[in-house]
Length: 110
Image (cartoon, rainbow, N blue to C red; front, top):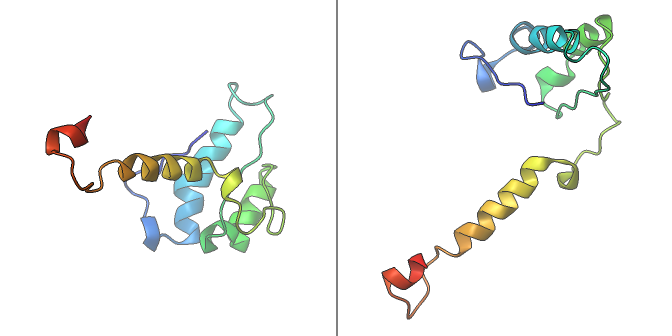
């Protein structure tokens, strides 16, 4: 499941309180809904400061939400991150658009 950030979220300027209010409260409500209540899950977050803040982790633990704690996730694990595979595919496809000597514009499009 991918959690989409609302427009009111501060993005890179967000604080732990913003993250809890705008993201985690919605995540907790969703995971406790009838749709997901009996399904296994583990919340995976990166090492961003607002994700690892004591307030955010206390919030998750206080609501009984299963999540990977600091040190349980490898610090650099591109093989476990789906986005890394997408970046590799994108870079591979982009390599076909680089200038190749001897080919016309029409040939490059093929």
